[in-house]
Image (cartoon, rainbow, N blue to C red; front, side):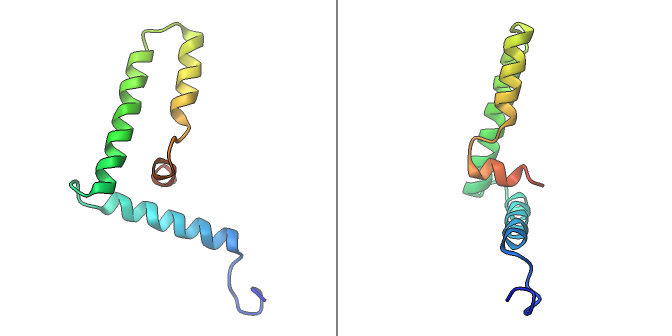
Length: 81
């Protein structure tokens, strides 16, 4: 049915919707609630990364891996772009 209607598969449509929403979030004004939440989360991650730089190399690697994984759907969406 998707082929007959020239509609992309659901997975591709969902990916496009997510990417468009991520771009939309980045265009929000700085005082928008969602943009503030995104900025707060990214600042927390930067602070944790800076604090872990003084740790030993093995614990630092695990901390970096942990920080690179998005913790929320918001961060996951924005990190797509």
